[in-house]
Each structure stands twice: as structure tokens, then as C-alpha cells.
Amino acid sequence: MVPTRYFWIWFALGIPVGALVGFASAPWLLFVYNLILVAAAVLSWIAAPSPKHIRISRQFDPVLSVRVPNRVVLTVLNDGPETIDFRMREEPPPLFEASQKEFDLHLRPGEEKQFVYTITPNERGGDYFRGTFVRIKSKLNLVLRETRLRTEQPLRVYPNVLAIREFDLLKQKGMLKEVGIRKSRAKGLGMEFESLREYTEGDDYRKIDWKATARRSKLVVRNYEQEKNQSVILCIDIGRKTLSEINGVPKIDHMLDACLMLTHAAAVSGDCVGLLVYSNTVKRYIPPRKGRNQVGFIIEALHDLVSEPVESDHSMAFAYLASRWKRRSLVVSFTDIDDSDQARAFSTSYGPISRHHIALVASVGDPGLKQDAECKVASREDMYSKAASLFILSDRKSADTVLSNNNINLIDAEPQDLSAALVSYYFMVKERSLL
Image (tube, rainbow, N blue to C red; front, side):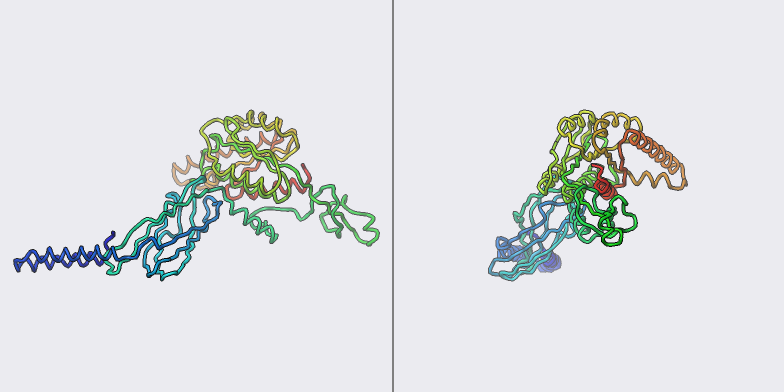
């Protein structure tokens, strides 16, 4: 039972009533006034519509994406014989940001209403809705009948799966460049003939079909289908190097978003995708396979990964991979390398991979370092911040040089650019038939 403002107004009117009865030497009148007010409140609560006639169902995507708004549809039905006026409050997990939590409803018998709001999870993993609280207005509007409806519902938060849908939509429209993905206009350079077309500037002269050119009296080139069933293996380091954060978001989260996008792009292109997760030991290994089901397996394996405060054993992880997969592949290692010493140690471990496969390292760059390095010095703090940023950037540049000298490719991109850079690199590998 929750008193309304009208109850407190009537309660406050008891003050002048008490003053009057004091002058009249009849204190029992104040007691009668308060008794009537309390009795009216209790009767009002009893006469209020029952919450058991309120039916609530909640619908949302079973795969929620972290750090982006996810749509939730709330359906409320009154299956009772009387009209119900009430306020409803949703209780998503505490760390979720909701666009709206409270709703005012007026439902006639048999009436149904829908509400749409969004929730933004800040962390991956499992959680649940805590239920729904309702406050039903009574007949005299003196009190509200409050209760909790048992609408608990589990949910799971994954890396940014919604970005995959945006990728598919833009790909259908031929607008992947809108998200920074560069894809060549040329067809694949595989060996299986697909079609003939007229020569355009920039085409490889080796693709000219001289017999067709002679018949048509103009240059004609051959199109070849891109090769499929190639392999992409994603190696994710969840050791201490990925514990750091960028603007409050762990680096591992940005890596997983990019990993998910690359997985989807490879699956759509008909290639096999595999996964290796490691720190000081191998945590998970999924052999490369093709198909949508494989994407689902990888998403499920990624959704609850967290970085561990341990030193990663790169040698053990890559030896494990080399013993289980021999076919030439694009091997992408998601890790963070800060200086040349770390780069040399990593290159020693990654060396056997780079000799037999296309080896790529994907790192998340901190945009704050670049900003601090380019800032104008106006105080002693600015000077120290700029010097430290320049020192860190110099070390990372030295690490890049060591990796390049060991035949290891590197993509060091800011969080918002990492996914596009990786997918663009994958398309480049496909178009040049490097696998």
C-alpha cells in the first residue's frame, strides 16, 4: 500500500481539525477523523483492481549486442472484468541503460497495448530481467496497490552482432565503403572461368581472351570465380595484455567485435573459419569449418570471454595450432604488442605460422595517445602527457618494424576502424589469390 498525495492532503487537513477540537475540548473528534481516513484508505486498497489480471510479455532478440541499443517490445494485457489504471516499472539488469523504464497505462477490459524501448548492455555475459513492478490506482485515489509481477527473464549479451546486420544490408546495396570497407571492383583471380566482359582500364592484360577479342574486334577479358573453401583462423589472446581499456571499454571487447565481423564476412564468402582462444593455456579451439552454423558456434564461444591477469604463452598456443591445422590459411592473431622486445618474443613464437600461412596481427590503437601526442603544450601536465604519449607511440612503431621484418603483417587501428580494416584486408587476400 502506497499513500498518494491526496491521502497526505486529507491527512494535513487533520491539523486544523485538531486545533478546532482542542478549542472545543473534544479530542475524540480528531481520533474519529483519523480513523475514518485510515479506514477509507484500507477500503480503497481492497477495492482496487487485482494485479492478477495484468498479463505482461516481453520480447527481444535472443542475441543482444553489447554497447549498442537493443529493441525490447513489451505487451501488456488486461484480461479482467474492470478497467485498470496503473504505472508499470521495468527492471532490466542494473548495469543496463534503458531508454525508458516507467509506463502509465489505462486498460479497459480485454484491452492490449504495446510499448517499445531499448536497453544498452555495458558488459557481455549472462544476466536477467528482475521483474516488473506495478502501482494500481484505487477507487478513491487515496492509495496505490503495489505489487511485483514475476516476469523474470534470462538474457545473454554477445559482441556487437547488430553490426553484422548492417554489414549485410550495406553489402546488398553495394555500399560497404560507407563503413570503411574497401573492396576491389575486380572479380576474383581464381582458376575457374566464370564469364567474359569488355576490357576496362586497369584490368590485368594477362586476363585478355585473344580469341574472343578477335571475334568481337574489341578487347575482351575473362572473369574468374573467387576461390572458396579457403580458411581463416582467428587466434584471440585473453592474457594480461588485453586487460587495458579505451574510454572505459576493455580492449578485448573491441577485438571480439572485429573478430565477429571478420567471421561473418568469411562465412558469407564461402570460406572456412576457425577459432583459437588462449592465455597461459589453450582455452578453446574450434577447427575451421564453413557455413552459418559455424558462425553460431564461434559467437557462442566468444560471448563470455574475459581477459585474465596472466602472461600469455604464445609459443604453446601456436604450437598447438600448428599440430592440428596444416592447410595454408589466413591466421589472424588478436593481441597487443607495446615494444620491440615483446615483438621479437612474439615473432619467435609466430614465426612457424608466418612461414606456412598468411600471418596477421590485429591490435587496438588508443586514440587518446595520438591526441596527447599532437596537443599543444600549455602546462607542465601537458608536457609530461605529450612526452609519455610520444614515447609509447615510438615503442609501438619499433614493434611494428620488428613484426614486418619477420614477415608478419600488422593492422593497428582505432576501435571504430578495426573491423573495417580487417575485412578490407581479408577481401584483398581473396582478390589477389594469396591463399
